[in-house]
Image 1 (spheres, rainbow, N blue to C red):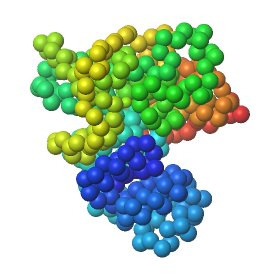
Image 2 (cartoon, rainbow, N blue to C red):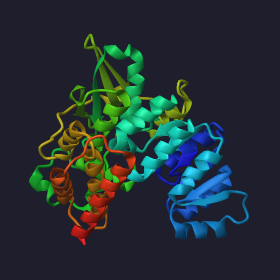
Image 3 (cartoon, rainbow, N blue to C red):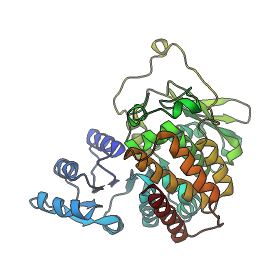
Length: 376
Ligand code: MG
């Protein structure tokens, strides 16, 4: 079952499914009816979910000649999770919208391949606790975490001392705060090494994405934030590393290709070839590493701070960021405003510890409304 099947991860997952003849029992899209139509005909899933109501009506007409059972809205995902006999769910939804589906998947006992890092950012404690209770393993579909998952296999859990996440540095690596005042939306959408959806491409440019990934790693692997670091590695060949007790560092490398990460999550503990060229070290020549500029790209340090504070703050950080990014994509604010808006909201928020899922969603909803109002 693939949630978010028309997105970048979703379509690459369907490539992997096609290569290995994996049956796809259910798919979901937000509004992309045309992609849904093609995917239903190519993969003949029994169930499909369309999040938007208008798009759902359109899909109903378009797919009337097929046997697919259509469901509408976020609740539709919950219904299909109960009906479907898929053993694995790939959650590739964008943003906090992926949180409930993550929880429902864990409750259903199906294996979770998780590309929706916001589930862990917003409610990491709840999600990890539920996974442990249900005995469900979460396989990360995020190149850094997939790398760490692989590196951790090199030693006993107690021997692993530090997680080192690599970061491409994004399109504005080396820019001063002053220079960031003048960057445009078009500049922002040019990521140096990975081709991804728009939201995550903006998050990569602000380094918010790396901040989220630090939080994601802390929850997934049960590490203290002080034992997780990020290093800028422009070539994106090392996808992340683990330092062990004896200071040995194990790195996972390869040419950037999300399909290998998707296949890792789907076939673990087996490995499968997903196409693409092997790494050519002589052609690569050298690899470079830099300290991230957390003074200019303050969202990465804000993420660490927010994780340590816990409670509702990580969800507030995420909600404020989602709203700011969508405002930037709609050209309502400038690139540099994203960081200011997010920091202001986080710092003025009155936190609460041990929130429930409802409280997390409630807080995030309030933050979104306030930002929308403030931005007109
Ligand atoms: Mg990543």
